[in-house]
Length: 285
View 1 (cartoon, rainbow, N blue to C red):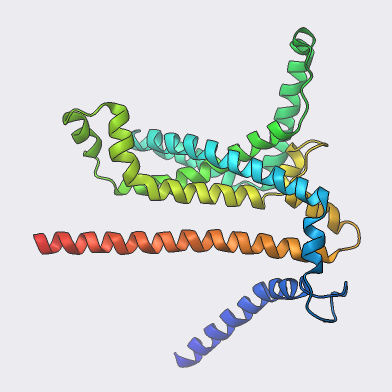
View 2 (view 1 turned 30 degrees about the horizontal axis):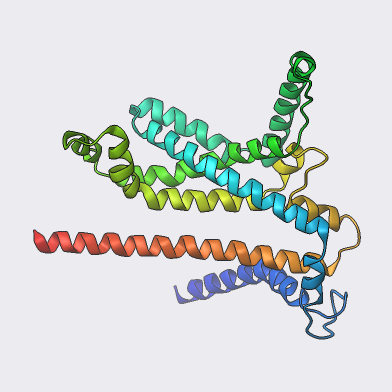
């Protein structure tokens, strides 16, 4: 038994080294004073300065933040509404809807990206051939199609974050609020929403993280005039790799790590609060 424990710890250590050693090397060499990716020549913030002076990267960063924030807001609202609708269904229709909801997450990104691209091309073609001449406008793939694509793949993550909180709620809490004179809107905003708020916040953070991180779906749906940060990094790596990529990747890693830390801290706080409430109820009883 002791031998198996040592082997398990060694395997875990080797896995961690394999996964995180490249990231550590990337972060270290983002502060290297030379362009060398193998020899450390001294500490410098030169590549971070060059990064923030690069107009292409800054434009891609602004586009990424705009898409991610808008997609997070819209998908959080729609995903929360959909989760409440699923929860109020009967068991069999709810199971079917949840199975359909899980398809985009289990599906390969390239299939989702190509499918959305074909849908947008078809819809834009139909509009331009029928209403384009009448309205005098011609639609193209760009920021709008990119935003719609991000909303599409963000919604399932919000639903999966909200559903567990709905299951934890007292099923009679909304009805009790209505019996006490609250309107349906007041019952939702003042009673139901505070109960599921942790799931909504976690879903929003997850949606934002997925949007910032996405490359494949964005690549197929952004068109030729719109570029996200991930797409810009890909175009930079097709040429000679610049140390600016190390600096940019380090900043992205720090942002994602911070968001994950926030999610985990919130989850831990929620568990401790739930444990305290259960302990208080036991003491009262």
